[in-house]
Image (tube, rainbow, N blue to C red; front, side, top):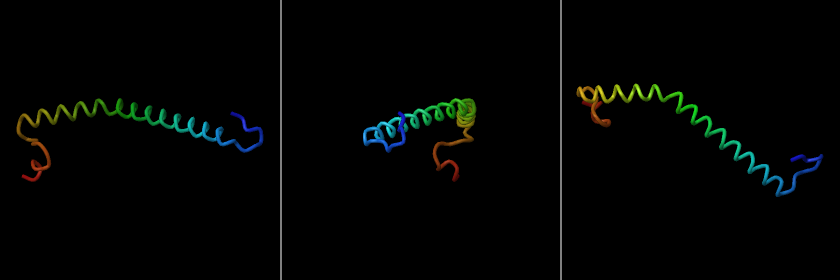
Length: 68
């Protein structure tokens, strides 16, 4: 959309805002996917440790366990 030296009309401004919002949403989704993919190995290891320690009775469930 070229402006040719004039202010955008209401519909052009609306279209521009809609496109900007769509691009922002796509960017946020891509960032979230990258973050999840990057943290997946760490999360997997932490979950394994929690299950292992929970089976041994070292880690309890909820906040009450840490206060004992």
